[in-house]
Length: 606
Ligand SMILES: Cc1cc2nc3c(=O)[nH]c(=O)nc-3n(C[C@H](O)[C@H](O)[C@H](O)COP(=O)(O)OP(=O)(O)OC[C@H]3O[C@@H](n4cnc5c(N)ncnc54)[C@H](O)[C@@H]3O)c2cc1C
Image 1 (cartoon, rainbow, N blue to C red):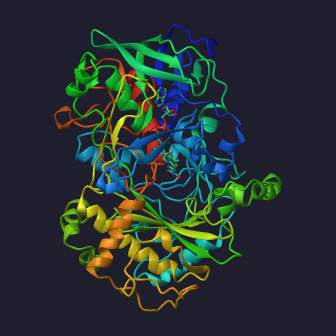
Image 2 (image 1 turned 180 degrees about the vertical axis):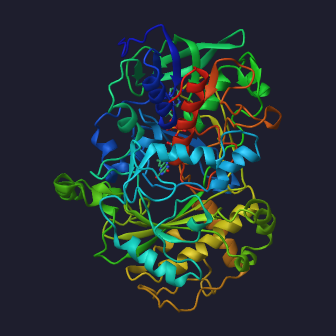
Image 3 (image 1 turned 120 degrees about the vertical axis):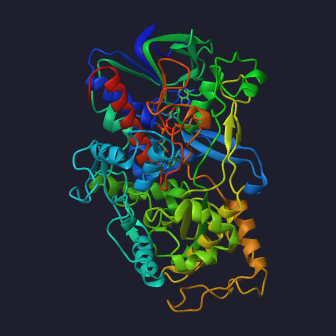
């Protein structure tokens, strides 16, 4: 049996998980406190210089079923997801999600973080505290002087190395077709000015066409003497002695180190254990440690060290719906890469090697609008939506209802019709009302959890998805490159219904062409389609929520697990409520904030 790493018996701080937030905390602390000895145990492989991680255009390769850099979780079948076993991929490598994600740069509303502070009592987590931390983390190469952006942080933001037709046309046509939704050069400014605007999508891609991930920009680029990051090391549980976390139990992950012993070993932490295994990993580690819902721990005969019924509850994501259309054959799209066409990749590689532009220097998602219904549109969403609107959106003008993005290419459809080009609208719900849960299902460390994503258990969410589909479809059929819908991947309207596609529609309609109208049956067809095709946005969060203990909170506002000393959680399991946007920015915010809190507790500062 091989022993992949020699891990010292004891460190000052031990991290369970070396993903986005965890690596930020570890590296910030290692820099500020050179005498602190830190170990990060990461279950996935290392990523240093690996072409598939650093090259933006290859992001889709991490979602291949054979991928070793992604962990695939499955939600159990339920009516809300068309009774399917739905897959939820999650980063599993040094750098976590930051090293495999789609690199879309999208930041939340100020009110999202203010909710954490004001509604859940987390002093220091409001937007006025968090925005400066996000500025510190980024260099906004697009225009570093822009308000609320950063000019010297480790992570870089550009528009990527290309701008496909789909992006240009979506911004142009969308802003003309939609009433009071103009073009803008800012969509992530945190304020209401970023809402209901069509804008070019920034990306976490450096000027030299390299992915801006945490692994290469916080860790691999700085030679640390006091920080050991061990790949392929999976944490089973936190060891708690007399109410104090004293270390963790781990084994070598067999998916990374095939043939390694599966015996459990222990590493001690003299000051702190930080669980940073992400929204899908952290609640499972806490439960295996005896921290969580009593009935679940009892079921697996795990001694209850701390009863915290919120562990694994409050699961949230942004349910996403992708709808493909055919594009003019001359359109530049990512389909060749999405299909895994080796010849196509070989053909486009020289351009990337030459000047870091083209297909490999982008992700193909080039335009976006964060849609919020105007007051005169609210009634269009129907009666199920009214309460939701009053509670979630009405008083927060900086909150959108959903995100409408446009992609050159369709990952799900390109393999099915290899001779075609696609454009695709991807919609995700910003604040889905539905909630899910995730708990241990077995004592097997590698087992899929008992996971229910909860999508579309609340009718307000279906109303949102329905309205979003109707809007997106009208914009797309007006784009000059549009060549008709890929019908099998759209709602199945009854022939002759007012919403049915004209089979002869193989090209764009006029800007002022009549819009579709919908019967109750048409709306039902959209709802069925929504349930049948919804997927994750890969934005899981909320499963160890930072809330008061009597509201099912798991950690306090200093990220301490209630009732246990020297144990914190720092990752996207801690948000008590959702943010409207893609979640990399918020994972960075959690990492930077956690580092600040811990540095203060250690008697220093960053
Ligand atoms: C496919 C995909 C595409 C995405 N696209 C975008 C995008 O375009 N833009 C955007 O803003 N956001 C995107 N995101 C979301 C964003 O990347 C994540 O929300 C963010 O990275 C989560 O950070 P985290 O620190 O909470 O967890 P992670 O970064 O997932 O880190 C958790 C780490 O813990 C490790 N771990 C888990 N269990 C254990 C264990 N038992 N022992 C040891 N280690 C463990 C995991 O392997 C992982 O590396 C995407 C995510 C994915 C998965």
